[in-house]
Image 1 (cartoon, one colour):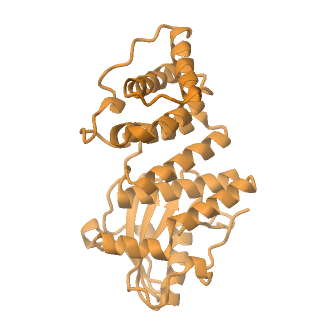
Image 2 (tube, rainbow, N blue to C red):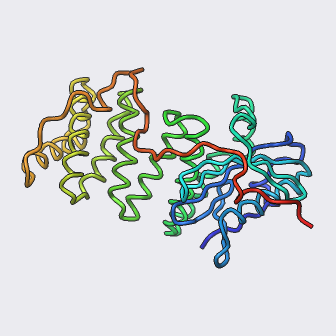
Image 3 (cartoon, rainbow, N blue to C red):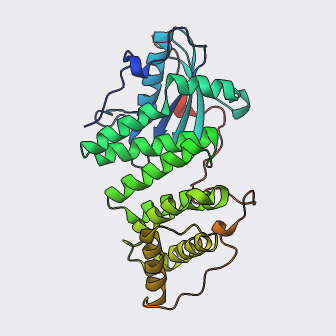
Length: 301
């Protein structure tokens, strides 16, 4: 069961004295599931996601009696769009350079109005009710927007990605869970080795459920290299983690086909501050451009 967006819900509405052009966020998953400000929308039949997003954002603009900005990540077209929506219902897309400069103050103000931790609590509530699809889509939306706003290596972005990986695991999508968890582990190995072991363990747990030989070999090599780095740094103290490292080593050594030793130049081997994309497996988004027709609407009559 999904939640309708209710702008008059105090937990979902910024204060009436909010700065004009406060930025909201929306997300369209690859299956068309649509999220606005951490709430999964009830689409009602064949209603297009762009229309649902415009209606929801316009409701905020009318309530605030001020223009509202919105950043829309649309995975159905691999694109991020930036909108400006007015209380009369009119909207237009804007280019990146027209958007509000992020800045720490604005980011803090927006996250105070729509706190990420409140969204995490909502995700957990869905998961506890075994509404795993809703929980996963909300987690994906949170991770995508935090990463876009704060970067992949930000602490909140990492936590959101870890939650998304766990929900993918619960849904039985072990390949996606492995990819997401490996990205978290890869970043930890580069930025804070002392906190990497639990993340490598989570990635290993998902990897152990894989059956595709190519994926088992490729992902397993990276996992083994991570475990070896942790061991060399004397950070492999937990017996459970030692057992997982040995399980990876054993599976690679006794698989159906030979596996070469881990390459020393893997992403996990990058030193702190090393060059390279933080999350190379994130699907790239096309940049915003003006005039996207699906997000342009005239004033309501």
